[in-house]
Image (cartoon, rainbow, N blue to C red; front, top):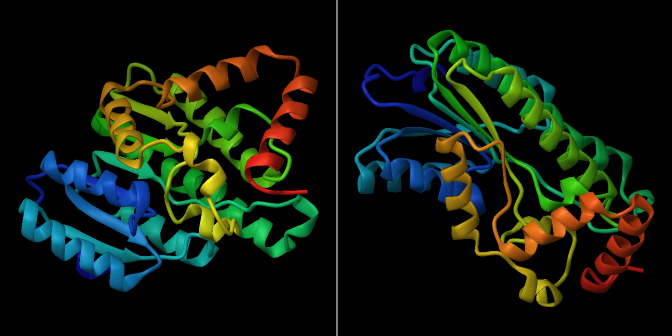
Length: 271
C-alpha cells in the first residue's frame, strides 16, 4: 500500500469501502464530482483498478485502488495502519462494505456468520476509530456508516445481518453525539432494499417479489452524501421506508417481531 501515498495533498481525500459496485461505486462518483481524491477499498482488484482509471480520466482526480479483505483481521490491521500514516488525514470516510444472508440463522455456517460480523461490525468500527481521532485533531471530518432499515427491528430470516446493522446505527448515533462541536460528524444511512449484488451474495435466487419495495440505488447514495455533508445523524431514503421505521419503533416488540417475520417470509420466499 505504501506506493499509494500521495505527494499532492491539495485536494480533500475520501476513503470508501465496498467501492467495487452498488452504493460504493456511486458514492465514489458523487465525491469525485465534488473534487475529492479517492481511496477505493474492496476485494476485486480488476474492478477497483478499472473504476480508479475511469475516475482519474473523467473527473481529473487521483483515485487509487486498495485491495483488502475486511473480514481478515490481518488485512484490516494493515489497512488501518496505512490510513493512519497517510501524509494527509482523510476528510471523508464511508464505511459501505457489508453483506447479508437470507435464511434462518441456524442454516448459516458459523464461519459465515463470523465473517459477516467481521465486515459489518468489526471493520467498520476499526476504521472509524482509526481515523476519527485524526479528524478530531484537525477539526474537520465526515463519516458515513451504511446501516439499513433492518437496524430498527429484529428480522427473523436475516437475524445476524439485522443485528449487525442495529449495531451500526447505535454506534453511529452515539459517536456523532460524542463528537459534537469538534468539527467531525458521523452519519448513518438506513436504506431499504436496493437493486444491488447484495441479494446474490445473500443467497436470494430472485428479487422479483421485492421489486415494488426497491429504492433507487442512485437516490439512496445521494441521500447518504447529503447526510454526510449536512452532518445529519440518521437518514432513511423513501417515505415508505421512513414510515416503516417509525412504526417499528412505536409498536410493541412482540408485534414487530411477528409482522417482520411474516413480511420477510413472504417477500424473501423463506419457510
